[in-house]
Length: 297
Ligand code: XIL
Image 1 (cartoon, rainbow, N blue to C red):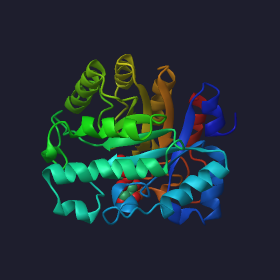
Image 2 (cartoon, helix red, strand yellow):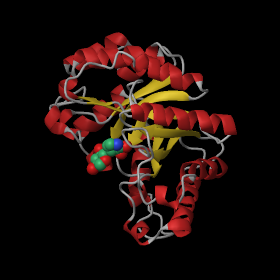
Image 3 (cartoon, helix red, strand yellow):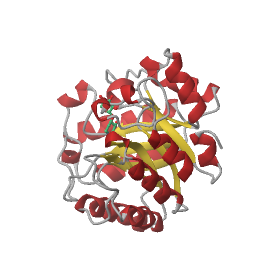
Image 4 (cartoon, helix red, strand yellow):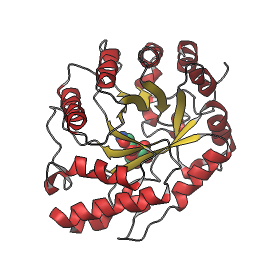
């Protein structure tokens, strides 16, 4: 295969990227994206602040722009994200307790109704844990420890056909407290029948540290709980070829690792652009890391 998407498809997986609606008019950007990838995540356009800027007034213009661009080209779309401590609509700031909980549920219902039956997965809850494995203190957490399960139950009812994911960063190393905290939550949800289908490991690797040797153990351990796993926001400081090859191989070695998404197209498009962390340089040329991933797939 000569593209990332086609190479991943050889083993039944996908290879995706994050897309910014504002960049779609850039033909270098959009042609690389359409050629190489077969799964698309909106980088910001489906987040709560974007989709419900005023209470009950939903805005899907930018999200739909990405959705339509992708599906017109035969690419699938992951939804990102419904409930998060960051990028909240400003009006959530005026709410707390049961009022905020209801606003979150209404938000899930409103956004999921719009995209019902259209998406491959939703990141229902994003980044709800601290580094030590305890729950992150946020306005949502303050509504009660059951806020995550309430979000997943509402999501299942809103669209029974879409895969429901929990998504987080720094959960790649099996020995890490946060990984264990998320693992225990998934284990608990599975044991009590709380609906959850997948775990997204963001996989933002920093600092030139080597790939955690137990990364594959983390993927297989989550999968053994009965959920799919996916690498959802991959970027790697200076695009270390060994880390890119290693994370790709780890996913391929785990049957329930269903796909890999990099968090942008060119280095210049990245939220970490000063770290040159992606697979294409600012001119749209394939980097060495691209080849290391393609060869590993
Ligand atoms: C980032 C986007 O890339 C930026 O454009 C935005 O300013 C902030 O959010 N974890 C996530 C993503 O789940 O939504 C974040 O995306 C990166 C970290």
